[in-house]
Every structure is written in C-alpha cells, then in structure tokens.
Length: 487
Image (cartoon, rainbow, N blue to C red; front, side, top):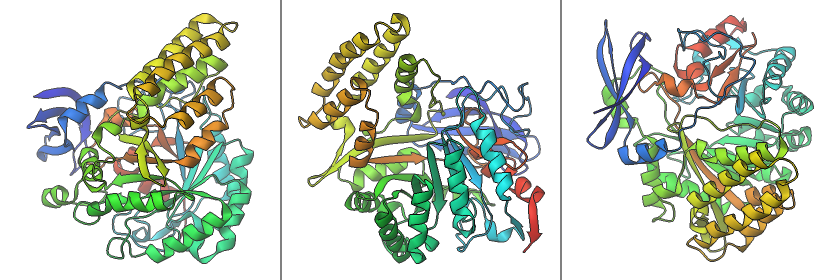
C-alpha cells in the first residue's frame, strides 16, 4: 500500500527520481524506478506501527528568512545552499576543519585517507563560515560542531573554539576519535578554558572486539572528566558487528554519568558501493535499534519511551510566546531520529516517561503557549501559574511517585525564570538518542528539505547533512574545490 509520494535517488547513477513510500507486511519501504537502471526497493523503517505513531508529530518549519537561494530550486538536492524551499533553520552546524585523520575506519562518512589531497580551510575561512551561520534569520545558528577528518589534528583548534564563543555560539562542540585527548591531558583543559561545551566521542562498543580503541577512549574520558568537559558517546551501529552491545553501551554511560551526558546512536549509512545482500545484512533501522535497547535493558527502556525530534516544539512555542523573540524550532522530519531522557540514580535508570505522562506534559505546554500568545504581556505571569497547575497533573499520571525533583525543576524554570535550572536536569539525566542519516539507498528528499543539521562550506553555502554526506557527493566536491595541497 502506497503511503505517500516523494523523490529519491537512483543508487547507481544518482539521478533524482519520483518515488513512493510503501507499507507492506508491517514495514515501510522506499520504491523508485530509474529509466536506465531499473526498479529499486529498500527498507525505510522496519516497524509500520512506530512509523505511524511518529507521524503524529509531523511539523513543517518556517525555514530561514534570508535563504541563500531565494527562489526554490526544482533541482533539489543538486543545487544546494539553503533555498526558500528548505523548511528548517540550522539547529546544529558542522564545519569540517580538515580531512586529515589519525585513524582509518572502514565506515567513515568522510573516507578521509582515500582522498589523495588535503582539505583544510584557513582560520579566516572558518571564521567566515561561522559568520554566515550567526547571520542566519530569524534565529542565528545556536550550535556549531567542528568535525573532519579529525579536528584535533588542527594546531589552532583552541583558537577556533575561542572565536566561536566570541561570535556568540551558545554551544560549541567537537566530534573526535579521542586519540589526542587521551594522549594530551592538557588539550582537554585548554579546550574547556576556550569555551568548548561538549565532546562528541566516537565510541562503538565496550569490548575490544567492537571497539579496538577502548583503552584510548577510557583515557580520553579520564582527561575530559578532570577538565569538567561533558561527553556524548557516538556509536555507529552496524548489524552483526556491535548491535548486541547497545545495552552495555548504555550501562557504560550510566556508570560514567559524572562525565557522560548522552549516547547518540548512529545506525550505519552506506556511503560506498554496496550490493543488496550487504545492505540487508548490515542495515539497522531506528525501530530495530530501539528493539535491541528494549531487549538488552530488560525493558527498563522500551519503544514507548522514545519520541521524534519535533515532539519538543511546544517548548519552543512557549519560550517564544513568553519572550516575544523567535526561537530555534526543532522541525526535523519525524522519521529522522528518536530520543528520550533517563534519570540515573543508585537504583539504576528511570526513563522520564515513567515520571511524567509525556502526552499530558506536551499538551499542557502547548496550551500555555497558546494562552500566552493571546493574553499579552500583563497576563504572562498568571498564565504561567495556571499552566504549572496543569503540568502538575501530568506528573501525577506518571508511573513513579518520586517526581519531586522533576516538579521542583519545572517550577524553578517556569515560575522563577531560572533557566540555569535546566542545567541541573541535564547534569542528572542521560540523553539517549538516535539519528539515522540517509544514504543513496533510503534517500528521501522530503527529509532533506526538513533537515536542521547543516554543513557550512568555505564558499558560504549551508548544505543539509544527508545531502553533503550521502547525496550528490557534496563533501567530495567541496573538499576537492578547496583542497590546499596533494598528500
């Protein structure tokens, strides 16, 4: 049964094709036909029921008011820069600082060592990219992540982080393999002092079989803990390689809650040539990953605990209504990812969904936002007081009785306007999320047009993540165009 139409790519020649998203036997498939290479049918989501539950959170954003291509291009995704047909502002920006790397992982997006040339933008070019991001309207990009290659290969990384803070980024991150952070404890402190917020640490497992760099990662975590830098573990999950360790990875994160703030699972994307047999063998979808989490945590976490990214839009609406200022809006496609929070105590992990009736919470926040929009400035405080009473009802509906701290947090944040209280929440809680970045086998242009993770390039363009990495080979084009020298 066809659910909807979209556009996709031919996995052989890369041509843009009309496509259908189809439901068959409890799964969701992407089907398209290339005039030259025939019909292709690849798995999109492995659980139709979960697919439809996430559809309820569909929310198309307002995009940017100063797009780089003011007229929407009919050639999407082959003519990027953000255009007026792009529906999400930048939530997180990536800037590749180099394509040099001190490792050689076979599943790397960047495939850095195979390039044959060095891509390494100058300091001034990087500043220019950040200025483009901070000039985005109606909301400047709030977060930048320096990636590569391996960003710690840059001698001027600390100065780059400092400049990012000077330009006003509230969140500054690096995505790293941890080698230099393990070998150089001074670097962690230097990055912290420069204003680095979070380290995204590649971390594929808790055994040498799945993570040959485990000793390096443990040392990096030790050094980062001493510096007080929070870490998000980023495992690339490949079926048959490390999918049996997702529960142990979460246990590792909970055991290291003093330094680990979250786990962001990334189901593998196939950026090289693959046959259908290899794809079927190694592909893992978001529902399959969450099934593994449920089984391997013995039901401490289950599918109903996870929600798509746009579910938090009511919170953006509330802050926007209260402050009168445009806010970042989490309008990624509802099938791009899933997430939840768990509270970690001496008794183990408790999902936030056991403490709060999430549906009631979202509804109460949405009602507060709508009342604030109608009520004007004078009634703001009274509206918040009334809304907090409604929020209390959602806590009473939670399964756990121990919601006092969570209730206290909400009261301090909304009534006292003490948004620093949210830091307490993040400090005592563990974020668990997954983003399934697309490849040429499951490429959906509707998802691309909703992407809120963008790459900045030296020529001033902003390109959606999956277009840059897995679409019409933008990464290779950008790197070659701005290559500095041959290796």
